[in-house]
Structure formats: structure tokens, C-alpha cells
Image 1 (tube, rainbow, N blue to C red):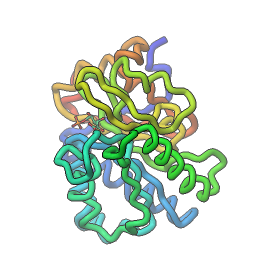
Image 2 (cartoon, rainbow, N blue to C red):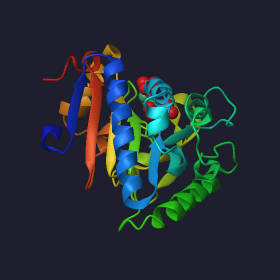
Image 3 (cartoon, rainbow, N blue to C red):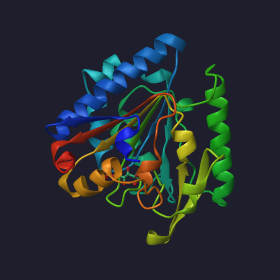
Image 4 (cartoon, rainbow, N blue to C red):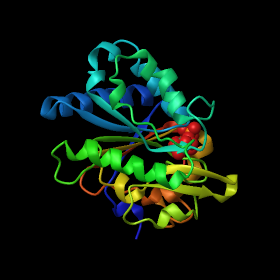
Length: 251
Ligand code: 6PG
């Protein structure tokens, strides 16, 4: 079965800048809607280069004064095994480009503590933290409102890397995951948990992603090789925001 039969939208933007503006508009709209409904909004941020531009845009007018920053719970989709001050830290990237620039509630910033040893315990603690925040949201099944994801050139998303153990996870929300190709551990939200979110957005730019994007979106199901295929919204929206360069091979 082709992934064309699955439920998702592909939005193609002329440039990475247009894509970033559309993602910022979506962030503003979704946060407004949820804050109106229940006075709180929950999101998971990602690492990588594409979200950096989004964070920088969100931290300036017109978004800066329009978003109710203090009502947002910030989680992360994944984190590298480094302390929060490290240049590779996804938390640090979000902190420098967004969180330090806006009026957040520090109690609502939930970073993955990947400097902890053992990582397993930190993953369980993160899951517990998610559970606590999300169950107080009165949702029938605890889930995040908006998840931002990127796709690596190898088809990974969050830290769900090709052929890694976390791809087989069915029950856990958060796991440590060993990445053989990099000989390193990471922490990641799992596909079953990501898939329950109300809105899932992939941000993908650049010609170097074009072939992989075609395989992931239009190719046969090979989720062990191309883990981004594991992301399929259960009851909400899955949106692929891509620029023309990344979309150039799509039919
Ligand atoms: C990470 C990310 C990862 C990222 C993709 C795409 O920690 O590395 O969360 O999943 O989103 O690798 O990254 P780019 O946007 O830089 O291509």
C-alpha cells in the first residue's frame, strides 16, 4: 500500500522563509485556540537547523506580543546525550533562540535531562512529567497539542534512527535510544506517543532532502529504514511543510 493512501497533508512553500512564516502562523493559531479552550497549550520542540529559523521568527513581533508565552508547556521531541550548556543541546538551541527572548513560565519548560545517568531513569521521569502535565489537561487520552519535527537525510525523525531499538517500542512514551551509526545515546519520544498529538508538523527544507522525502512520502512502507514513516496521526492532523527544493522530486 502506498503512503498516498494515508492521512496527511503536504504543503509546499516557495522558499524556506515562506515555510517558516507559515509554521509560525500555525504555532500562533494553535496556541490561541488551545489557550482559549483550556488556558494552556502543550508543544514539543525539535532540534536541527529548520526550527532555529522558526524560533527566531517567533521571538520577534508580530508573534512575540501575540503569543501567550506564559501559558505554554514546552517539551522536546528528542535530546542528544549532552549537558544543557553544550553546543549540541536541543534545549540550548531553543533556549537561546526562543525561550530566553520571550516571557515564559520557567515551571513549564520541561527539558530532557540527558546528562543524567542512568538515562533510562531520566526517560521514565520525563514520561512521568508528561503524564502529570497532560492528564491535568482533561484530554480523554493524554497527548500533546503540537509537535514540531524535522526529517534527517537518512529518514530519521526526533531520535528515531533507522534500525534503532526505539522503533519497536509500542507502550513507552519516552525511551533512551542507542544510535549505532553515531555510537551515541539519545532520548526520544516514541512514535506511538507522537502519533497521538493533535497536530504534528514536519519542517523539511533543501534539495539534499528531496530523494528521501519522496521515498518517505510516496515510497513503499519501510519504516525500519525510513523511521519518519512511523509518524501517522491517529486522530489529528499530520502536515508536511516542505520547501520547493525538498519537494522537487514529489509527483
Ligand atoms: C535532532 C533532531 C532531528 C532533526 C533532523 C532534521 O536532534 O537532530 O531533533 O530529528 O529534526 O535531523 O534536522 P535539520 O532540520 O537540521 O535537517
